[in-house]
Length: 326
Image 1: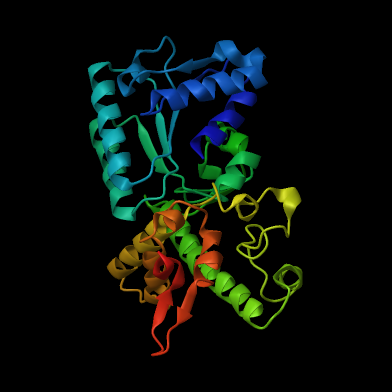
Image 2: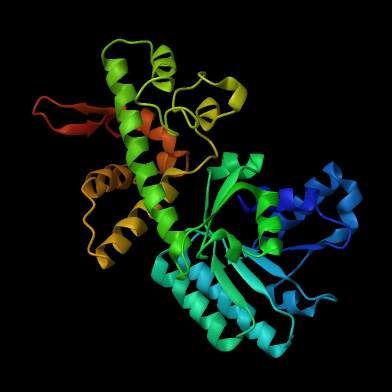
């Protein structure tokens, strides 16, 4: 997702803009630079690949924003701690905003925000998680959920930057972690809905229905959702949209990340004493799916395929026939 987001920024760089990219896997950053400069050679001189986090404060011009997109909270806190350390070694009076678009727990994000505020008061850390998945990142239609009280609290500069990568920007609350609160509630809904959609399509299949036709029915009926249309798990229904289901569920928002977000949402809900009535059931099936690497690392729509492989044996016990054949 980060590469798609950076690509949109790069393609819309203004004359005075510069873009710096860094990845813990140098070959990924190199491939990104090679690819985008071939597509938009005019902006090539404004794009710079950095070799380490220590390079950020050493540039000729001070940076206005650093956008981070990493897998887990421990990675966010490690990156932020290292950036703070390097900026303290190379001080600047120029204000810097760290925008974290990762999906992590609210407490983990607040640790990062408090570290930045306490160590470098004129810097700011804002959680700005996104929704829209890899497809949204690729199309530049992401939704950003920002920890600001109201839209007017989002600076014009930040708004311009986010608009380069996404379509919708929502101020979710002044408290640090408000953006993540919105994201986690949204992704809890996504995880549960995706499971229900895949289950329903398997029910239609069991009834002997044409599942492609059933997908068309759902798209204009009360069962319609993002999981049933925008990320339809049935191959061949929307070939023009290049959905993960059409390429063996490759890419997209992978099952193990859906499970991660579901788990974080459930953990945070406990801290707020909020019971989640569909959480445990959903987590059970995502946990079971993630026991298989072939499912864990493919788009969450693959649960349709997985649920189709679950059958009752003669004793009424549920069995994964895929594993039984092995």
